[in-house]
Amino acid sequence: MSPLRAALRKDLLLHWRTRAQVVAVYGFGASALLLFSFAVGPSAGVLREHAAGFLWLGLLLSSTLTLAESFHAEAEHRALEGLLLLPVSPRALYYAKALANALALAALGAGLVPVMVILYDAATPRIPALLGIILLGSAGLSAPGTLYAAMTSQARARQTLLPLLLFPLVVPVLLAAVKGTALLIHGDPMGQLRSWALLLVCFNVIHWSLCGLLFERVVED
Amino acid sequence: MRADRFPYAMLALGFPLLLWGSYWGLFLAPGETYMGDVQRIMYVHVPTAWNAMLALTFAFACAVLFLLRGDPAWDARLEGALEVGVTLSGLLCLQGAIWAKPTWGVWWDWDPRLTTTAVMVFAFGGILALRQFVDDPVKRATWSAVAAVIAYVDVPIVYFSVKWWNSLHQTQSSPETVSRAFHWPLRINAVGMLFLMTGLISLRARLAALRRDEELAPPGPR
Amino acid sequence: MGAASGVISGGWGFVWAAYGVSAVILIGYAVSVHARYRAQRRRRGEVKP
Image (cartoon, rainbow over all chains, first blue to last red; front, side):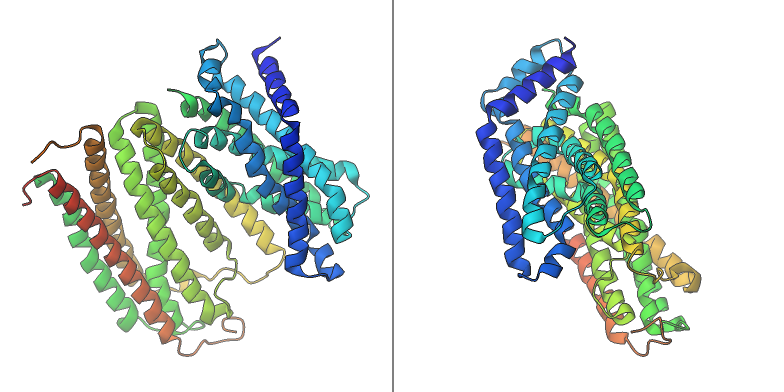
């Protein structure tokens, strides 16, 4: 089994073994969506209009929990040093972890869609496209998010630092994902979805390569 | 220290130039056809924009050089460039808001350049915050450099995405700044601010180097 | 609203505000760096020129 696959298997197993936490994060995300409704008011029209924004804000906030958690084992049990001693390149470790995080976030996002449908009356018939946007957006959050989670898991004030560092960087992801989702909900007469998806792809290409390159420097001793 | 002549000389050159350029722009240059006297804000706003971007570009260069060479002097310069760059970018946002209110009627009109600048204030300011919470000097330097590289690479992506996001709602175009501005006050202020920025980054980098020295070998009892 | 319809009259208050804010921040920041630098050098016991 290649190092990448082995590491990926390890990280997916970690997510599976801590699935109680996954449920808790999902609860957090869903309650965030509920709070947005309270903040904005019960007008169905307004809620539906901004449903995409609320979904992605909820996912973004939840992502800080998921990403921080993903390095919990490495930080608490000093497993990171052990992993780095293995003849596995740090790059493989990064990609495995980032991939696992991306899948976890995508699952979270997909899980929040029914909440969005119910609370905001915002549904779309184009389910595969929606899942595609959720996957691209989750990957966009995960690439820099995993790198910064690795960094902040070793620093003080880690809970504040991760969102502080991550949120400005992922503004393009937020913009593109919200726009894409909104187009799916409200209709896309001018066919703009493609362009926003392309932006997400570009963001992902750039950050998955750059962060993979830099990860080694973040975890080196 | 004799070597301190350089930063203070830069400051001594920069401030008078800014005074001269601003005086010219405020009192001697003619008002602009459409924007009236409000356009005079450009004589300080455009130089700030150029120098903020320059400072953060220099920060990016310092980050890359540190990652490649490991010389702590580049980390000190990175800290200087970050702080100066964030200060100038923050100033830019304030100037932009003061310009926008009489022009568009709102304090913030989501102009892509200014919005990107606001994101940069948070992105690069966050790196300054990161530095406060990392005790190991080598880790602090490496992580700041990594974060600076990622943040800088992200800037064009942020700009493009905000521009496109905004263009779907607004049709007003960005103000034609340079073409309508009277050239000399702008150039003088730009050069003045360049000297100022150079002096400030240099001085701030020296401060960072001294602090790092103290960290590694605290001075004995005096 | 200004530029769309024609001339913005007056507005000197905003001009002064912009220049004033710029001066305050630039001078204030320069003073801050200078003061911090001097303080750090004093801590090292160096003789100031």
